[in-house]
Structure formats: structure tokens, C-alpha cells
Length: 527
Image 1 (cartoon, rainbow, N blue to C red):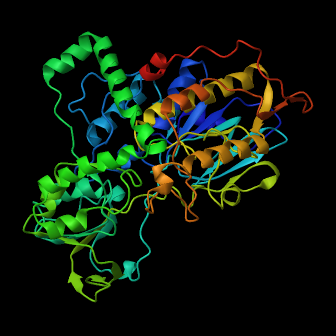
Image 2 (tube, rainbow, N blue to C red; image 1 turned 180 degrees about the horizontal axis):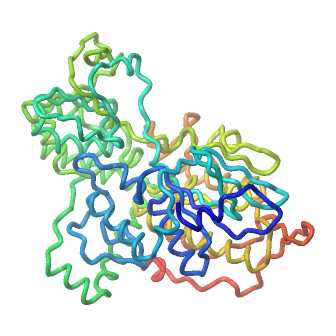
Image 3 (cartoon, rainbow, N blue to C red; image 1 turned 30 degrees about the vertical axis):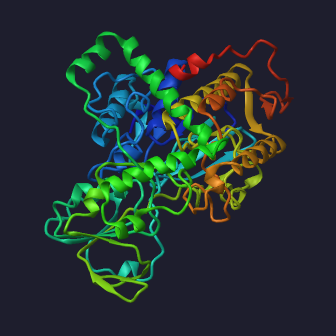
């Protein structure tokens, strides 16, 4: 175990600690760690339940796994990669990129792998957190940064008989490469983002492929292409060209938020264009009708593929749109009474992004529990701090998700906010900062009012963006540029700031002029 982690293992004590625990080693955790090191914070530990860095891009190694955000934008602004092989990054390249970041910034000596966090508890007397992992090790920390992300907990459907199936079955995020699919009858349950990548990549190998669809997705043409050696060389020799490519991509995607959030009428015109893609690829009118969504474009995640529709029309592939009644020991029975025998079941059923949102027990001030605080849907202030849980910061927290742009951009915005909070915490010798409940309430009331005008809430679908009670706990209701500007610095005014000196409270807002000037050009460049 690394020295820093060993020295940090202890029970809470009155002695002041500056240690920081980061939970998760994906984009969020690594981005946070890199900025900590750059600012001179070297006393931190990264805990991850897996056997290495990568997060989502380590776990999701199913056939065809690829990001749906362009490469130059789906990467850290401070660590461009001129050698991307495609305009949309593949999973192996993304994992290699994150491994490179861990090595370049000397993060591995801070990393503890195989460390699944099972609880975190705040001690108000000392202003410290105690974080415990499954094998009993504990870390005491001044602050905890939860960077587990929303796509870290695979979700399986509650189907009768699911556990009675006698053949191999697994979730796409836990792909079992030891299961040989060649010549087998394989069922893919779900038609979301992972399914439309899996299906074209296994249809030629399997004997028969059954794709079980509950709701058809909107699928737009894919603009992915290889990036040639000359273009890579240009980016490497003239980095400004890659910055320009990033800037251009950012603004092309950013304006899409207008259609999703304010001018939803624009989506009707877009639907007609997308319908042409379906018509061009699917000649059979009956099949085309089953693949045409009945809800508004954008209500669910918009998917990109040129390969999915052709794969469904292969002779060995069948689209099943009747609902599933039960899983049997040897197959799947649909509501029409028909049972289809299958050898292997693959669940492409997404993640618990809006449900069961506390990934492990978290206890804040007065013993309050995060899962109970979030029982009616997760809430946070700027998606980053939660009232009653001081010095705990969430990266990719509630309502920071996107339907149109790069989450890495949002992650960098949150990291900058947390870094300023930690810098002020240290400089002003605060014991802890805790966002005031009234500030959190006002922020979320306004956020939900804005969301009620978006296609995500009005588009006529049920999606993973919303909790069981219908509350949208996932998405940011506007432009990413707005979020960047709102998180450019940590303003203590909405917070209770408790000092070390006998618990004196400091509510003073920063002096006028403290806020840096942030231009939209700097926002696009990721600065």
C-alpha cells in the first residue's frame, strides 16, 4: 500500500489533517488529483474499487465500445492528445489516455486499487471525514471528493425468473470475454447506447441474435472517421491547430442546448432529418414503423450509428418488440406467450444514474444520512456540495449531466470550483464549509423550473435522466458555458464557514474584484 495511504490510515482525532480522499479514478478523480498536485496539495489518496484507473472506460470494454463525444473535446483541456486515431475515441484509446495521465502526473503513488468504499462519516468536532473500504482500512481526511460518476453502477431489469436462467448472462458493463458467442443464440435486452454498439459488433459471430426492444431510440448518422498520420502530425507540431479543432467542436455542440432547453420547436425540424436516416437504412415499412420513436427527439439520449439498422436486417437477427414477461431457465418468454430459446443473455440496460444515488452509506452532520436526504431525488448546490455534508464535494454530481456536449468539460468546471474551495479552506483555516440549506433549496427550485421547460421533461418519454418520481436529477438545464462561469470560483456567501478558532463562523463574501475575468473564448478553450 502506498506510503501516503498508510500514513493517512487512522481514526479521527483532534489534530488537524490536510489529507484529501478522492473516491474514483476515472476522468473526475484523475482530473481532481492532477489539479491538487499542481496547486501543491500532495497529501491525498485516490481510492478505486477496480484494479486500475479508467472508471467508466475501464469497466465498459464490450465489443464496439466508443464514446459519442468527439475525441478533441472528450479529453482534458490541459492534456491534449494529438494522436487520437478517430474523431470519436474508442474505449481502448480512452483507457490508454487515462493511464497516460496517471503516469505523467505521478498519480499512481497516491492510488489504492481494489478499495471499494463502504462508508464515510463526518466528525463535526474535528471537521474530518473517516472513509472505510471493504477490507476494513480507514482514512481520515479534511475533505472527500466523490468522483464515482453516474455510470458506475450497472442496472439490471427486475424480470421474473432472471436468476433462473441456466446459461451465461451478464451486463454490458461487466462483459464476460470468456463466454464464446460464436454460433450461439444470443439475446440482447435493451436498445440504448451500449446495445447499438454491441449489436453490429457481434451479429457476424453469433448463430442467431435476438434484440429485445422496449422503446426505440432516435438514432442520427455517425460522422466518425479515421484521423490520418498527417493530421496527427499537424496537431503534434502545431498544438494551436488542435486547440482550434477543440474550440470549433465545442461551439458546434454547445448550440444544440438551445434546441433541448429553450427552443424545443427546433427539434421537430431535426426529427424530419433524422427520420430520413431511418428511411434510407430500413426499406421494410413494417420494421421501420417499429423503429420509429413516438416521443420527441432528445427526450431520451440521442444515439449515433450508421451500423445498427443494417445489423438488425441481417438474416440471423430478429428485433423483438413485444414486452418480456419472464426469463425462463432456457430462454425468454414475451407477453404474447411466445418463448424463444437462447444460449446467452446480454443486458444492455444502462446504469442506476437516477436511482439509489448514494453509492455507499454517507453520514453527515448530526448523523444525517445521504440516502435519506436524497430519497425524493438527489440534490446539490451547483451539483457539487450537499447541505449537511461539509467538505464533501461531488464530481459529476446531481444535475451536472449533459445531453449535448462533453462531460469532461463539466468535470473541469467542477474541479476548478472544488480547488478554489480547498484553497480558501486552507488559507482561511476553516474547519469546514457547509452549503446552507436555503441556498441549496433556492438553487434547485430554479433549476427544476428550468428543466420543466426542456424536452427532457416534456418530450413524452420515460428516461434514465429522471428518478422514479419523475424528478430530473441528472441533467444541467442550459449551456455548459453558463455552468463554467458559475463555477469559476468558490463564493463562500452561500456557505456556513466554520473556523478552527473555537468554532467562530465566517459568512463574509469575498472582496469585490476577487472573481477572475472569464471570457467565452476561454470557456471554449477549456480554461
